[in-house]
Length: 181
Image 1 (cartoon, helix red, strand yellow):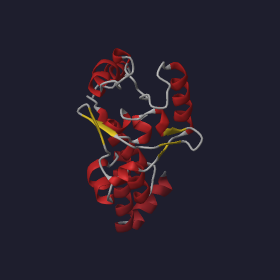
Image 2 (cartoon, helix red, strand yellow; image 1 turned 120 degrees about the vertical axis):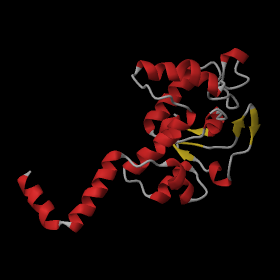
Image 3 (cartoon, helix red, strand yellow; image 1 turned 30 degrees about the vertical axis):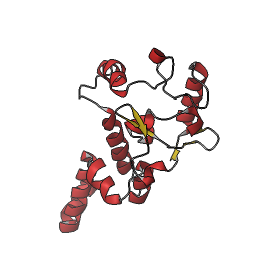
Image 4 (tube, one colour; image 1 turned 45 degrees about the vertical axis):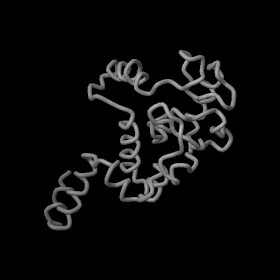
């Protein structure tokens, strides 16, 4: 869910079933959990609904059907350790489940919760999403935050940009190379 929505860790673990609108395919972000304290969202723009892809809607429906914590006020990721009265501890879930699963998949780089948000942002950018759309999906107060903090240039994008500049500077040479290909 983190990598397909760009939710912050604090928002993800503060989500309750009543926050999910299965019909409209969105999640309403109403609270956050930081250092085991329930509070308000980081910014006003953080409180906007987040669209959810159909695949994730189906996965959430399936999870809702399996978890014993299905009440509207139940945490979406309720921990059985405390009989659902509190969500899983994010760092424990990462340490004991997500990182081991990533290693089994051959992912050797150390990942954290923010890795998912960075990945989501970078993938949005590489698919050509408009900056304003990226800002709104990530729920940043300004586009500058989105660009400065969360996007990384992808190698193929850098290569394409460089090729475009060379084509402008040396049009005959690049034309000959494309005729040879």
